[in-house]
Image (cartoon, rainbow, N blue to C red; front, side):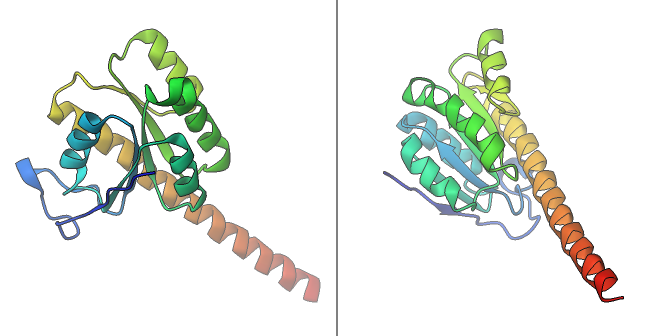
Length: 171
């Protein structure tokens, strides 16, 4: 069970390295047991995302996800012999406010179909350039932000409906 957290060094929408804008407000959980993948992605996201947490096992990731503190979950498809896809599938049911994306050595059609069936929004090959990797992760981060905003609107509407029903019963 390992955790590495990096807090954002940028403020709000201040451009980060290479003139990119941080993924403001997005809390990222990276699930990988490979140190090379961890180092690369933490380096790419460290100055852009608000928090980047790393879990080296699916069990540790499940514990973290149960707390509901992550918006975007990047899952190494090689972790636990298919356990990563199972986790993405569980997330699509138990954590509808979170977005998952799979990361794989090779992004072929079969792997993409498995990832999408599991509920992942994207499959990102590790062989792509850092700019392409960051672009795809930022797109997933934007989806996570929209999802979080949608969930907040639904919760607000539920509260309003409850208040209206209570007021109706009083009349």
